[in-house]
Every structure is written in structure tokens, then in C-alpha cells.
Image (cartoon, rainbow, N blue to C red; front, side, top):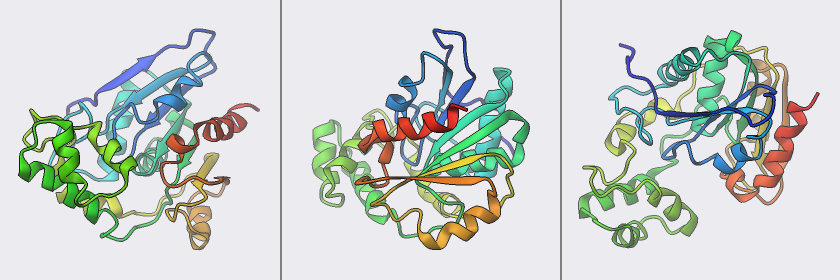
Length: 259
């Protein structure tokens, strides 16, 4: 059954005559602030919509989570705000949500920008160490970010990933994080899965050169589902390309926004 609750979102009108609306959708374990640096680069000329997907940030928690439901959640926000012909920009899980949104509501979207994710199914062990570290924090009942970091570090060695996860640390939450940790683990197979779509809208795929989320072998799948797809590779960047090389991502987006 489709949830009736609306996602938590922030809508900002441009300070100039608006050139349109840009919708930003974060990835797994994230929230609306993850793409904030990119969004701010366009806030003067474009209306900006940022939102927390279900089970993330300050949006509602749900035992059900798949791309059909998440796309419907975003569609409901767009309709509430009377938005159409938006450019939707999504990273990772948010990119898949954007792709599914374009499939079910193409009338609301002008073009897509997908950051470092392909329209394919991924292995179910990709985030094992992440979940191990997060559940260790929950089991320890950590009450401070520092304590949580020390526990997490036993499983997650990358400092950048630790800091990313700690942005959502919430000692008042039973899971110790604002995102629905237990729900995400339970629904993880749906998040790694993908059902093929056919979208005729202009679509830009931005890839981090050091990331393995989009590979050469995925090209056929991308073009079969997104015939108007183009690509842009950001050198010396991994999966969180928008955080590592924001200027390059902004330039790539500017290219497709400017006729």
C-alpha cells in the first residue's frame, strides 16, 4: 500500500527570474543536504527542491522501500508544489529514484542528471562493512559522535565514509541514526535491484573515474533504457563525486542546462 505521508522537503525560489526547477535527490544513508553545494551553485537562477527520501533524514519511516514507491513519493511532492518540466538530479540511490520517476511521470520532467549509478542490479554485499559499522554503533548504544566514530572505525576504515555516516548520528534514535537503519537493511535487496525502464528524455550520466558503479559493460543497458543518454567522466573522483569534485559536477550540469 502506498504511504499517504509527504516527504520532508525544502523548496527555494530563485532570487532572479527562474529558469526552471532543479530537483536534488540524495543517495543511500544520506539526506537533502548531501547535494547542497551543487544546489547552491544554481540557486540564483533556478528554483531548488531538495528532499529526504523515505527512511532518510526527517522523512517518514516505512517498512516498505523500493524504487516504485520512492518515485511515487517524489511525484507527490512535485504535484503538491505544482511543479513540472523539472530537471531531476540524483546521486546513487537517488539517481535510480530519478530514473524511475522519469518512467512513471515523464510529464513532470524535462531532463535527468544521474550521478554515478547505472540502471542495473548490483551485488547484495556491496555495503556489508557499512551496515556492520552502523549496527555496531546501535549495539553499543553510543551517546556521542566521538564514541560512535570509535565503534564505527572498527568496521569502516575510510575516514570520509565515517564522517558521512556521522552526519546522521542521533543519540535519541533507537537506531542511533536519523535514517531507518533497520528498515534499510531489511529492504536492501530492493535498493540493489532494478527493473528495466524505457525513458526518452535527455539524460546525463556523470561518472567518477575511480568508481566502479558505472562500467563499460553497462553501456548497452544504459542506452537500451535511456536512448538519449550522454556521459561525463570526472577524473580523480570516486563514488561521492559531487563531494570530491563539486566544481566539475557543476560544470557538467551547466552544460546540459544551457542550450
